[in-house]
Image (cartoon, rainbow, N blue to C red):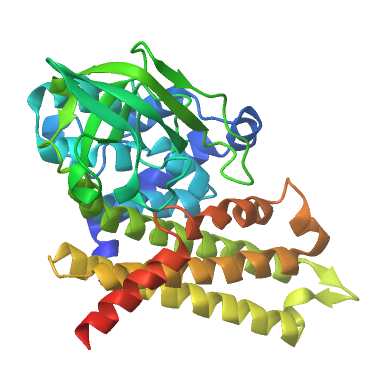
Length: 381
């Protein structure tokens, strides 16, 4: 038995699937139309013991580790949820880790606990209009003034930004480059904070996304997350978890599309016989399954080595790109094999097709991942 299928994790999968069937699937289309998830879903996920998986009980979480959190995300997608649902419901998966690792008791109580109880929402605010993947070049400035900081700047593409109560924000407290960046928790209701209307996107329709503006926002120094000027390194440390999580979402989406398409081609008849009886269809389905299994197997192997404390920076980038490539190929084939039905909004593979497109952009683009691999590979030569 592999570590992803222990008795405890099988029970966790069963809980996640039941939650999806009861609390998610009946409402997912409505939430996509509304452009956001209701806060009540966060509360329901907390009540089910899913929202806090992977976070310490001392902070209000449910315990477990990163693999447990990945198992929940994987199973929610396999049950019919989407990566957009995961991004929105579990935004704290990227918004809280830096804060919890810093360990400030006051911030844990004021921010982490209500978030993990499903009463509040926290977002990670790093990306800027002119910055993209260049974290070290961010421009949002935080100037120390007495017992606080005055923050001026803007952030873009912030997941759950329109609903968030707190923003774990990357700001420049020092000079140019990586060494001048810090992390501050900025409360939404502080004077000078402006949150845009939800941005309109291709996919992740149930996941609200916003632009943030900070106009001389006074933030207490007690909201500093970790040591001053160490924010860049804290962000980089969490990238492995974020990228591996996205790889899991990618191969899970692919597997869901394999399952949906297998069922469809066996049931759909053309010219008097099932689509599955045609070699061109069967072979394409086989290739979808192969790509998915390779992505899953490799991603899980990298996760295991990451959990063991090995240096897996290069392989994390490889895992993300491998899983994203597999997902891209599989969702496209799923829509194709569903034919005209696959192009319709009421067909689930259409939702996965548009939701999956962001996976090769968020958390580091495919091109950035390839650059990481190239640099580390050549450095070893």
